[in-house]
Amino acid sequence: MTIEGGAQLVLYSKIILRQLPNSIGGPQRSRCIKETPSHAQFAGRRNLVLRAGNQDLGSEELVVERLMELKKEGAELIRNLYPPIEPYSSGFLKVSDPHTIYWEQSGNPSGHPVVFLHGGPGGGTSPSNRQFFDPDFYRIILFDQRGAGKSTPHACLVDNTTWDLIEDIEKLREHLEIAEWQVFGGSWGSTLALAYSQSHPDKVTGMVLRGIFLLRKKEIDWFYEGGAAAIFPDAWEPFRDLIPENERGCFVEAYHKRLNSDDLETQYAAARAWTKWETMTVHLLPNEESIKRGDDDKFSLAFARIENHYFINKGFFPSDSFLLDNLEKIEHIKAIIVQGRYDICCPMMSAWDLHKAWPEAELKVVGDAGHSANEPGIAAELVAANEKMKNILKVVHLQGMSPFPVNFGCKLKLMWQREKV
Image 1 (cartoon, one colour):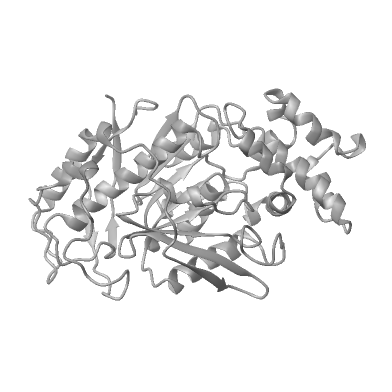
Image 2: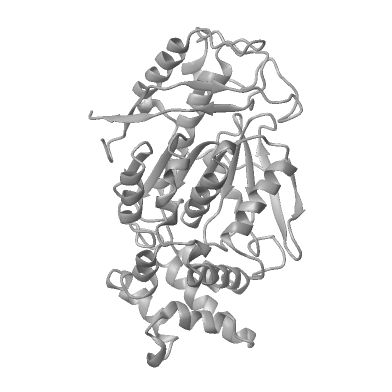
């Protein structure tokens, strides 16, 4: 296994293709992906025969051979964020009484769907989230989870659980007429991505995960009960000092009491302290723009209330190791994990535990990064991970397949091994 130097991959299993109805993902096009100079390495390669009528791969060996070539091209992967783009459609979907969630789509309307699961919970999405994905290839779906961002009612905890969010993801997928999609999630988004994929593995074509958070007691205790204070004592003390000494036996419970107070100012004070503690620790080096988010009362209230609500309820999971215990349901899904070596919010022990339990998932450790997806090293590896997913899908989708839309249902049932470089 290679970590911090890049992993090489060996694929040795079957690729199963299933065409979707033409109505899903837009009309068929003679060319599904616009070729640009940055993607020139794929131009002219039409050595695979993939036929529509009988779904014949022609030669499975040729597909695997081409995929093997891709592992040798890892250094050529694009690692820069894509330019800012605007959504081509957006809306609100009523998922329950009282919740309505905001959603948007950007990129290629006929591209391969990818759903972005934001962190927190309660963090909401931002326009920069679109930039991790090639807009010529991906149909990029962002949505704000219950109570977060533009979703309403704001900061609402009623009927707001992990299982409610999983149902919302399915409702959104069906609303957008998507048969299956790639799942991308960081921090809490990685928790939700794992839980969703374990609940609906047949709807997931691949996973990119960042800053792994398994919502175990030891992870919550590390960050909220004093462990991380050893690294950031200056940021910890304001968080600690809001709570009287006689209530410091459990900070999560003490903040829960204040974040659910009948007095709105008490809620805001607790929300600011909770949020600033996190925003001051998410980067390896201090980031003033991130820290300032703690001064935004509207953002802080949703972020702190919803996070605390999930943490005090242990993620609404039936056991502490629930996500690790159910990995067999998704071990066939191609997955890439990106983890900052010096992540204080979600320390590397969780990514390491996940990787040990799920060795088929590729682990990329960024040696000069903390937690945030916006740190240069983390962002570069997230883009590269999506590029790797894209390249695999392009082999299957595009090589010699001009009559097909990009997002026909493609299940890459792959087993992955590591080789030492």
